[in-house]
Length: 249
Ligand SMILES: NC(=O)c1ccc[n+]([C@@H]2O[C@H](COP(=O)([O-])OP(=O)(O)OC[C@H]3O[C@@H](n4cnc5c(N)ncnc54)[C@H](OP(=O)(O)O)[C@@H]3O)[C@@H](O)[C@H]2O)c1
Picture 1 (cartoon, rainbow, N blue to C red):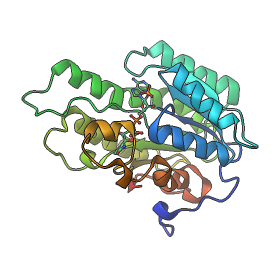
Picture 2 (picture 1 turned 90 degrees about the vertical axis):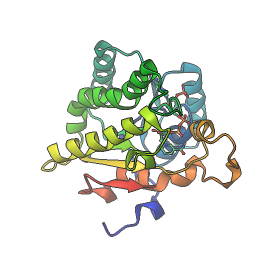
Picture 3 (picture 1 turned 30 degrees about the vertical axis):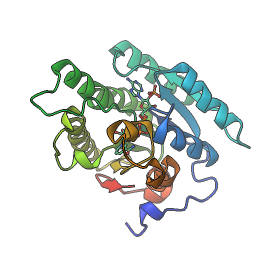
Picture 4 (picture 1 turned 180 degrees about the vertical axis):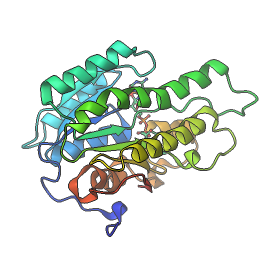
């Protein structure tokens, strides 16, 4: 890799006509990434669970100059069944015939408690939303990804997805799982055009970070827009051949 992805300066039109689905595009990093991808020419599929918040992202995108009108895909990762995943994949295939980028960004934090105190139901919920849902969505979207000329999948990890730390419970375990899922998928596709990578955005000023560190001075944190260069690098053609990596944003 000759380029430092954290300093990547995306050229205008980098993502022209690429179809990119971003999970959790209603807030935080996912929303900022959706706006940036649209500015760079992509047709963005905005995924989330809250129609009103997705429509707000949609409105901000269509208010930009010369962008493609995005699509909205409402699917609650906590409750969606296999039929809902299949119908999302079918609508991507029938509307676009391919998918150029898939960004697994949606996550929940869960409890910040010791393993001894952690609620078993919440444990399952966090692993389901953060890990199992990413597996299920990837599985149904592999066919349209394979139909793209230069497809890219990005998973979202965390510092606690690489080193276990006290009180990070199911969230940390789910992120270790995400790192594994990304590596397995990259390895399974190493002789294909599909690249699969993981990003740890690092501390970023979002509602999740505020929930994890309520006493912290938010103004000192990077904004979602600050962490986007690595994502944009991995979504565009300059990262062709880069796969199986776990990068910091
Ligand atoms: N912020 C950080 O400091 C930090 C650090 C390391 C890693 N990360 C990772 O970066 C990613 C983005 O985090 P963020 O800080 O931007 O978080 P955020 O602001 O809380 O946004 C999370 C997004 O996920 C969506 N989501 C949550 N549960 C969902 C469900 N059941 N179904 C569908 N969508 C759901 C949220 O939808 P709603 O708008 O409806 O809530 C929201 O769009 C996450 O994977 C997170 O683990 C963040």
